[in-house]
Picture 1 (cartoon, rainbow, N blue to C red):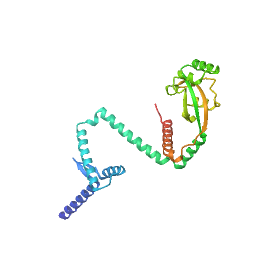
Picture 2: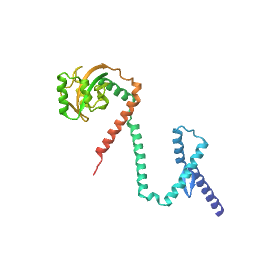
Picture 3: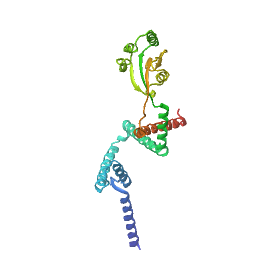
Picture 4: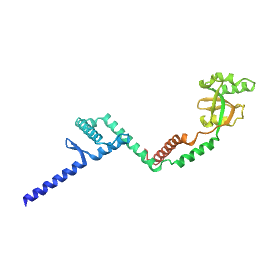
Length: 258
């Protein structure tokens, strides 16, 4: 009877050992490295273009064993308790979790092709397919801008006065800003520009964060917008960023911050 019990116990231990072996790829100083971890490592390499081969799996096993040896030594020396190491570990953990949250949120509420197309149509319609050829003179003070307007009313040439502009990119070109759509400019500038008739200049200085502007509208034209396929990816990424920003603001609004 005792012989039978010993045999049964031996079989049980062998089975347990076999199961543990199946679940782990190695045991380093008594600490197992799980097969699931190795499989995840291989899967990540496959995503990057490598082939899942026995050779790759062997390399992954060796890499994980080497890492475990080094980590155990770092732990033995108490390095994980050092403030700067804890800080870095916390930062890495936070970033990994944030990236996982972003991917999860996009999977649940991403941007569909239909949404991207609708946004494209809205932008094209809103822009009106129109471009503007404008000039401006930028100065620091409102009085300077008013003086320029007075001189223009008396017949001074805009291109000549533009030489004193604080905008180095356009001053040497008579204030010329080339062809651009209205959205290319900050709102106060854009609003004043599109309200002008061709050949007219602003009779009231326009203030932006850059200073005071005198603007002249030289011409307008109908511009053909880029094809949807040309901007689809860029627009999709922009919409994803906007959704994530809104999501972050929603979480922040709900959070209790003291």
